[in-house]
Length: 248
Image 1 (cartoon, rainbow, N blue to C red):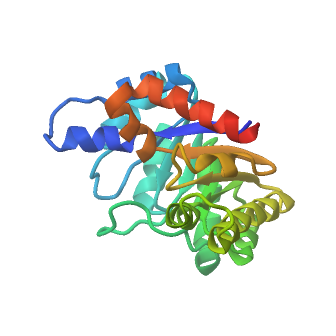
Image 2 (cartoon, rainbow, N blue to C red):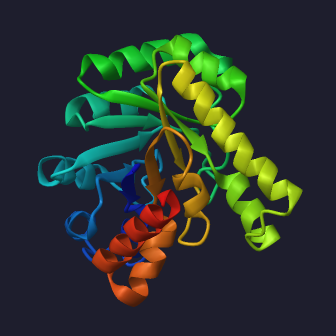
């Protein structure tokens, strides 16, 4: 079964709404672990809109599972990652005006830069993942740059699922599902681990969780949204159950 990485960025989003101390992402990480999270994911954005440097520094010794730092491939973020040394760094594109990460990283368009960044992060003991679209060109470039894993952007699949009401008789939904699965096979054939994430929720995660060779799922917004009603520990536990049901 793929491991679950729980993104706790939106716990920090709620805290930053009042610029206060609550809710604390470190406490959220503890609750997520108790619910069955195998990995804690945070995105330290350049504009520090939710997770801030102090959160990352406090999380590193506190987290008992894998800590995954999502980051832009900038000199500042590489320096911070090399200081903090999370278990994994996931390189993502970043736009100042976007609400959340939209689209995959263009590895193929900046291979020399990516090679340098990947080498610097690996030198500090991290595994390195690329958040990309499912096309062959980006997968091949990621392998050439030395990435250990590729996380397929599942946003288009999630949009297609909502548009079709989850009915796989709809060609558009089948096409998006198959594109993610085919991308995963290419990733593994290139010698990297297959990860997936973005837009996944309790309803649409099953068909992705069942994909051949999927190693990790990274999910945040749906879990934190569910936690408003049932608590974070229970929300994570329910997602673990949804993933297990999809595999079955």
